[in-house]
Length: 178
Image (cartoon, one colour):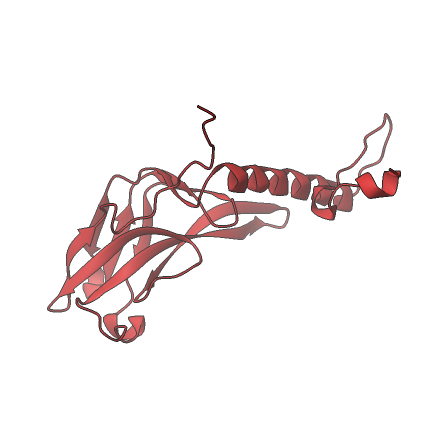
């Protein structure tokens, strides 16, 4: 077998360091991508996407001008791309019900789902912070991790469901040989 046939996939390419080597921004980006993709591949191989730990509480808060905010306690999850999401004390403004769109046809209750998505944001010229974006949807989504289901009653959040029927937990892909 030739060396060409054994080359790693491009996303796993990394820099071969040597003494006195001058590293460029491209070299550092390649190394960061290597580590990020390697970790995501390991997570995808070991776990189904979902909540790993927490969040243990969801608080619904009415703020100034009658805006509603959801506070999500500390926790972490693995998204469908294998990226670890970490959230703690995350606040997300709940959109107006009219902005959530219509209920799906045949929906038995007035509700919406709460999802967490990975979002990187620039915090400076040379810094990027990993973050979590919380989204609300009337219908189930394939992106992100399902955290909870909100039930509405008379234009207010009546209940926050976080039981196993309303959340998606990470599951191990490991098999026992016994």
